[in-house]
Image (cartoon, rainbow, N blue to C red; front, top):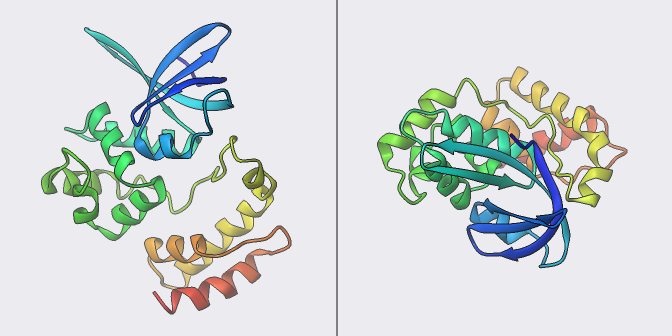
Length: 203
């Protein structure tokens, strides 16, 4: 229904955002991780949204990046994981941490989320392991100016991760190693790969 809403923050709680746009206040359910990253009341922000329609309710769920939104959509497609369960998971861990857990088969990490047991966590891993990409195609949030300035490095970053997997490292190891690097605009895939190999040897 709505791809995103750009407006002014009117109110924030740990699980809800009121975003004012054109004199309309939108109640948007958010994970705790989003609440902690939002600027204060009165600040302008762009929220990527998912609309949940049920017979007795119409709810908006919001995220700061397309990556978080796509991970959320994949979670709610898992049998037995509804909108609330998916929100609980992304409140307990970031999208990257969830990737690590899924790719490495770490059900215990996912099961730490409220209302998510071991069986549900194992089902998430089983159903999403082949659907979770090694890297985020759009890793930077539109709400982070500094991150936008580094977006040109994403292609080199992705190439480095693909090279790591070609060398025999697991997707989880490759992603974790590259995410730990401080990557500058002048670094090509070869430079990123060299640094990642140093990091991965310590994991």
